[in-house]
Image (cartoon, rainbow, N blue to C red; front, side):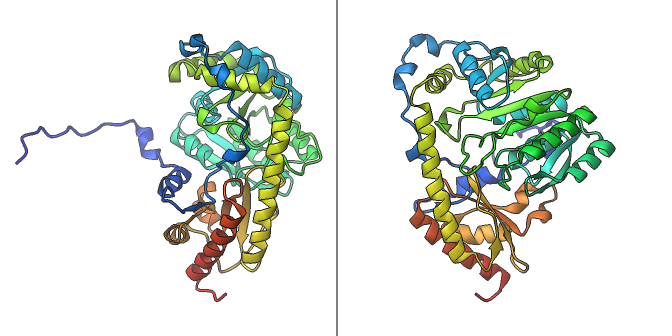
Length: 399
């Protein structure tokens, strides 16, 4: 018999009852076996990343504590970078983050009480759902159309439910890949101004643009009245292991966001900030981005060809014009549920089931998200053939 005292019953915060695991992180943890072909996570291509400027990390002063707002050079470089995309901000409106995911956490802490209505696209980013629901939000969803949200549905929800904020991904939406048209951006901004609804605009894929012929002006830049928070990340174009992102915000929100940063982790790691600031100011930046896009365009086209060979009778989809994902809707009789994922994992293939991206998971049982940036063309060919076989076997539909 053990003589160790029994542990007392744990008393946790009520929100822990709503704390769910990230399905994409669980899948990546299960996909570490050698030979696994992963279409699950948003992993950028390591061979397309620029060389890390090691000399910028050598200053011993960078390894001391820094300011919560971020390094002045980083904030200035980010303000200029965002300004080139159409959103004019000052460096004082920039907050350095440990990845843009931290910005979602801060926005939730700032805005959400239990029962607070928050409006999103349907489907939407799985980690945004996880974060908003953790803090007790009532998540509402406006369905996506071909070039942006369904405006009639959006206005109905704004008028009748009066959400405290809306979370949008206008550039290559995750998971659906939708890139809002210029007209849709203006229309959304007009609605948010009319109903005075705070916008959280998330743009991790903005600079992975492959075939878009309009400037993708941020919706935040089109607002005339509504407050806003703008989230950006370098994880899809630079070194994701550094976990570097940023937010910019309406000046009235910045003092609150800085205090949340102070309470969370004091400050973002300084060497990475300086490495990114160096790259943003470098003469190689545009060439690096052009090389990245060329590489991603080739991989996107390789997956499109492999999908046409193996999924033409299974699903329908539109080739993405940017971002890192294909979003497939399976034909009647086929599903992409967790059961299919388990079967695919047994064959050494991973993907993201669509149910994870919907508030009501059953809404996504015929959808799946596939990452094209990480696998080689040969892996795409083999992995998609195996995945198609798993989907057919699960549905018991003959090939």
